[in-house]
Image (cartoon, rainbow, N blue to C red; front, side):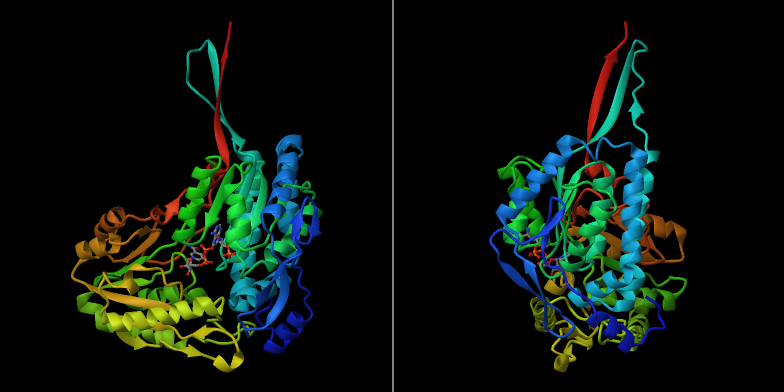
Amino acid sequence: MSAALSLDDVKSRASALSFKGQAFIDGKYVDAQSGRTFDCVSPVDGKVIAKIAAGDKADVDRAVKAARRAFDKGDWRNQHPRDRKAKLLKFAEIIESHATELALLETLDMGKPISDSSKIDIPLVVRTIRWYAEAIDKIYDEIAPTDPKAVSLITREPLGVVAAVVPWNFPLLMASWKIGPALATGNSLILKPAEQSSLTAIRIAEFASAAGIPDGVFQVVPGLGEEAGQALGRHMDVDCVGFTGSGEVGKLFLKYAGESNMKRVGLECGGKTPHIVLADAADLDAAATAAAWGIFFNAGEVCNAGSRLLVQESIKDVFLEKVMAVGRKMRIGDPLDPKTQLGAIVDDTQMNKVLSYIDIGQKEGAELKMGGKRVKTESGGYYVEPTVFDRVQNSMRVAQEEIFGPVLSTITVKDEDEAVRIGNDTLYGLAAAVWTRDINKAFKVAKALRAGTVWVNCFDHGDITTPFGGFKQSGFGRDKSLHAMEKYTELKHTWVQLY
Ligand code: NDP
């Protein structure tokens, strides 16, 4: 979508949209078997914009049967790699040709600014699917260096039926991190979007069909977590669940797997990222901009958000002023306005959770330096100001628990050793960052931080070529990069004896 569009242009495009709310099973849109639906409420203004099929066990059963049938028939996994590649590329192309519509759906559904959904989310979805498509006919298997009288093949095979259970913060992007590698490796995939953000997942299902991906290979079953999500987690014929969301639900998927068929589970369960700024950082303005955007981007609804700012004491006051100056300039407003930088929180439950943490932080003794309130109440939507706490102790709940909102907790540290100790003192280990001009210190700190990704002198940089996932209770398994393909394949060894 062009940046030159006005709010009126975007609104008129949004008002022309139609919303599909049905499940997509075995190549067709269908209602939930029960006929039940739930409301899709837009956080932009609190209004109901669609009815979504409330898929449950019966719908999951239907989808799993179709997925298994497609897998067994082999129409997808046994296609020539270059044909599978061509179809996934076509899928990406159709998504790209509907980029404006998808960006609008994402914004209306979960409240992120249209400039983000159109310039970040949807282009990255296209890039992700395209990148995995391109990988299909470029990856080779292995031959082990065994006795010359044998040929020992080590090959990767698709798992079968994969379920992707995804959150609402980057609805289609998180889905694409599962769709790309799971389909590229030949699996059948069932996607369960979050109840707050089902619209784009439902819409792209027909694009997969139009691209020639066989029926049953890509299906979408919307529904509530406890119903559709749990049914996938407990299904005896689902081979793998790729999950992104809260640690609490991640643990449930481990339990479901243990109580059913030991299906493979990959978990990406969030974090409490330490963003460390040492006194010798070369560019404090750049670090302050990164620290502010690191927590306020996407209204803080980011699993790797830099929610704990660990600043060396000699620069703390000056640095925090710089961070707040960036935060104060951020334009919070109607997500449909192309000029908006900070949109709505996904729903009233999440907004109230964020506000309750702001209250908890103050009661715990942290100093509220900026923000802290709900704004734009008259819109009917759910908006919270960029909020900054100072004098946070790492033992406080605002430093330990994932708030998933625009709330920064600032902790003062003496030196890099204390920064590492506090940085690691959390259940999570998704990401971390350090700013310093000393290359030795940078490597030392990066090595000591227990996190799946460490940024040095930057924040939240990445690429589809780089793996993403966590240590500790941030989960296990990796999204993105070729490593994600390991999650959706089984390793087979075939020993051929030569006579
Ligand atoms: P959840 O972990 O509850 O939801 C993630 C996905 O799991 C959704 O599709 C959800 O469905 C599904 N789910 C929920 N309950 C169950 C269940 N009992 N069995 C099977 N599947 C289930 O995250 P929320 O969306 O509720 O957000 C809550 C908190 O999780 C946030 O405040 C944040 O702290 C964290 N979170 C972390 C994310 C990350 O990227 N790490 C992303 C989103 C949230 P449904 O939507 O229908 O409940």
